[in-house]
Amino acid sequence: MNWTVAPEPYDSPVAALWRAYCTEVSDRWYQLHEGRDTGPGELEREIAAQSGAELVPPRGVLLVARYAGETVGTAGVRVLDATTAELTRVFLHERARGRGGAALLVRAAEDAARALGAARVVLDTRGDLDEARALYARLGYTETEAYKQDSYSDHWFTKGLTNPSADPANRGHSERI
Image 1 (cartoon, rainbow, N blue to C red):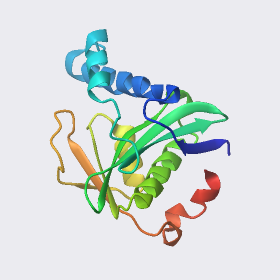
Image 2: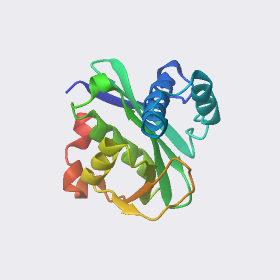
Image 3: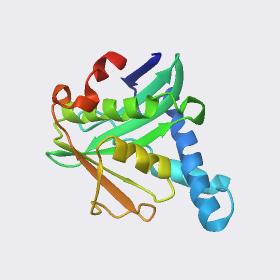
């Protein structure tokens, strides 16, 4: 397997995948609701509003996935309270999908959440992001009540974090990163 996942500063050049993520999810929303792609000004406002500055130690981390050395994905983790971390910015570039990287990236984010002291992970997503909802369900996340208000979110998930060696779904995980 040619995957690596490692922490990266939120403002590093490889974190530029944030723009690709924003473009994809924003275009999907606007296509669904307004029949058009995101306007350049709308995209720039969205990117500026969510810089990622909260994804820095000791209360957060941005992970970057590479496949065969090429930067292809991100996942962010930020501490919400003494036992809860939020999974955010989960994105895998289209050219790298279907190779097991999304699950690997989420599991690495769960490991990062454990290292930050979290006992559970929460996340929010949208109804039109079918692939994301299916991934989270497959990885043991369950739908729950809203933990925050966000005009673009309509599905919220949670997962308790167990010792990774005790979870059969994670066996061998550290060897794959």
